[in-house]
Length: 359
Image 1 (cartoon, rainbow, N blue to C red):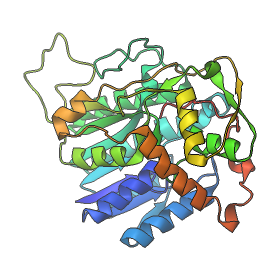
Image 2 (cartoon, rainbow, N blue to C red):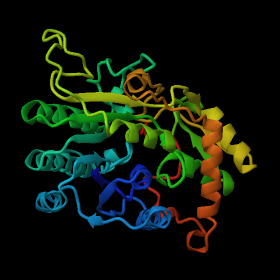
Image 3 (cartoon, helix red, strand yellow):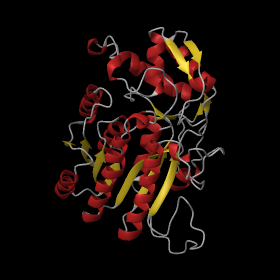
Image 4 (cartoon, rainbow, N blue to C red):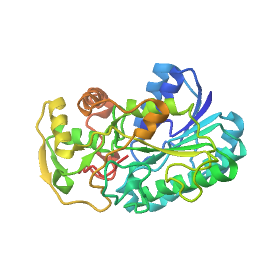
């Protein structure tokens, strides 16, 4: 297939591009290489993909640039779109809310409009476990109510799901939304906890654990995310005319629109997570316990049964194994001269390391 991947220089995007190229697809990437974190990491991811699977066309375009998005679709005419580009981060949404409107709302609208004008066989887009917000019941089911987001980031992802449904209903665009649960692994974002925690432990700095270390997260290794996406490409949702008009499900529709959780289904307490990092780094963490932060979700756990029914696959890589692979990459990448000492000025919003971003 001819596939467009947005956010192709991002953490998940680079891994997805590599897998698609290896599977024989024709891939075009899109990324704006913004400075939310050090753009060099994005360039290095692209180099890594090129070294592994050959070069692929990569357009440097901002999602908010509607004419440029339209021009790219007109030129490439993708069969499928995997939309992973977004302004990420829960805590940063408290500082710069406009960035989330520009990228996650306006940008997603531009993708939907181009999918309407240049019809695609399947649009897969990234949502987030953040949409579950104040929901106290776990495991999170795609049938649960998600009307109480705790951050603008989460609200923007819920908005994406609603926008996709309207375009799916009005224009017949097959749309699949993926609620990711705490994705980690090699080439990860430096604002998320694996790199922040590993940095603090290596540099013997105090590691601040919010909610007194009682958070639980359903960690999902990057390879499980990629495998799920690769399998879902061929499972574009269909119109289901027999769906109950009176009680439509939150994750299904008469329109060709579906929602899936992608999570490891085995939540781990923050203190256990830190202990595993200590094990793989061979060092002991200095820990300070702090209260819960605004916008934090207490616990996450995915019910990925719908994903398994559709694809025959569930995330399966254990946290101990995944963190071991991550630490190997971390020590190799950040030991290079260009990254020593580690560039703290490019880590946003801070180095305190609370697990604040469920994606």
